[in-house]
Length: 185
Image 1 (cartoon, rainbow, N blue to C red):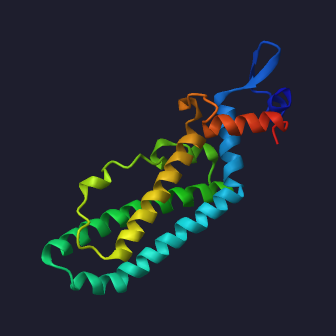
Image 2 (image 1 turned 45 degrees about the vertical axis):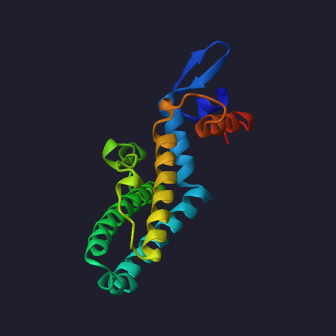
């Protein structure tokens, strides 16, 4: 831990016999490590591929399928496709901000600002009418929902570790334990 204090520019509080990295330093270290990780690269590719797949579907096959729907189903299709597009744009925005950090085009402190944070999904899935919608659209909606949920959890773990309850099942807790076990590498 003392090594972490030195590597973090000495900005650490002293507690007992060892040095503890401040929450701010821990957040910066965690976020900086994440944007350079294979997990981020994989998540970025997955997110952008889903954006492309959805755009292609909505502009092609989905447009044709929507013309064959009943009036009520066509209204549901329009609402569902707008919500899906909005959700995917939020995902893409988050990924592009972190890629900008990775490529040193944006400071981590700027990326950590609230305007770049993802919010939990506001509307429950049960609030939507899915009856009569094309299966491909439903699959895209489910894939986007799952990806958004994963990215939302990553966002909270990376930028809000102080909200963590510190339990051993918590991802941030486990990451910190690994960092300490392997000398902060």
